[in-house]
Image 1: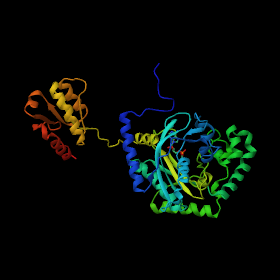
Image 2 (image 1 turned 90 degrees about the vertical axis):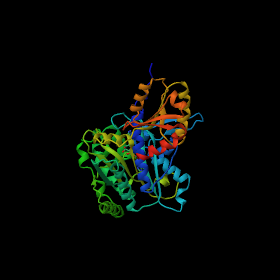
Image 3 (image 1 turned 30 degrees about the vertical axis):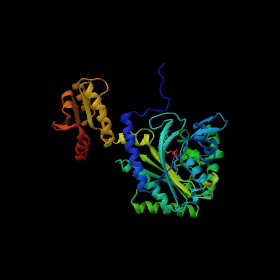
Image 4 (image 1 turned 120 degrees about the vertical axis):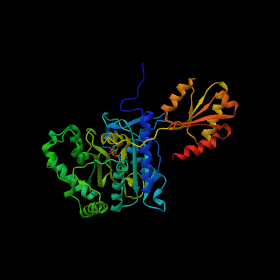
Length: 426
Ligand code: HAM
């Protein structure tokens, strides 16, 4: 029986992989522009990291983690997101002691969630994210949101919407939490079993329930914005003022609740309004997580970040009919005719490659015509023909495929000749 990829995962075939490379390079460029340094953490971590970091009451920890016991009896989990790992590493390597603060980090990598697969939702997906640790300046909240938007703008996307909320600090959240419990408790029996649980453990998540979203109590639920204390309200005002200064449009949505427990103050998502993007309209999300560093054993340190998945970014490009400027071509193709020319072609191929020229040749024992066809298919700019007669004369024929021009060149000078010629068109 043929074995296929596991449900919710996919192969990225060469044509698609080129798009990934292009997008990843653009995002890396942007990280450099914004001065975020790359960090790479393991794909699996101690399960406890996510239980404490992402939060025990979240869907992610309760039903979506790929958890296993290794041969040494340790409980490990394939990471469902990047923030907890980055914060763990920040604490483990005492990055809070570095002279330059905030610590600004970025990461790429596969994440794993056992979710119901659909368009834009897979069980393995690649996130690109940034985290800024050590600053409670509202200007950095604005920086993170500007960065998140730029990830899409730099690729030409237009149908973007930044949706913003404040979840306030601990005091504001506690007051709001109590108000939510008072509000929903009389309706407890009418809510789904998940929400009945959430009502006690994390009532904010009731607002995010897909099953109960049309319950009349949802619309009249107390808004967090009415429960922000002075510090939280001022903080939110400053974040918005910085966005205004940068000329960045946003929408405040008091019902924006993120699916992870660590957020406070700023929470945001970037949505795509493009037709055909699919039922899931969120492109990326993030927010502030003051308190997470302490939770994971470090000193009191504020933090903020966001993450996007490359999969959804590529879907958005498709929905907006944007094609990436990906060049597919080869500098040169070697056509060898006969046994001795083939020997010479193998040597020449190696020399050309060592000189940095993108070159290939036939390994299928094809006739000359078919070899030229291959050169065409590969969009090769030049073809070098090595035949018996040319070889005896110490020469090869070089054909410029676009103009059809052809000339004989001494075989010993072919490397510098092609270096010059391939550079000319650039
Ligand atoms: P998140 O909202 O869980 O946040 O995920 C961020 C982004 O990852 C989503 O907006 C989406 O683009 C992508 N994503 C999530 N699940 C899937 C999936 N099953 N298939 C495809 N794409 C998916 C976080 O992960 C936080 N760590 C973000 C953050 C960083 N907050 C602060 N710093």
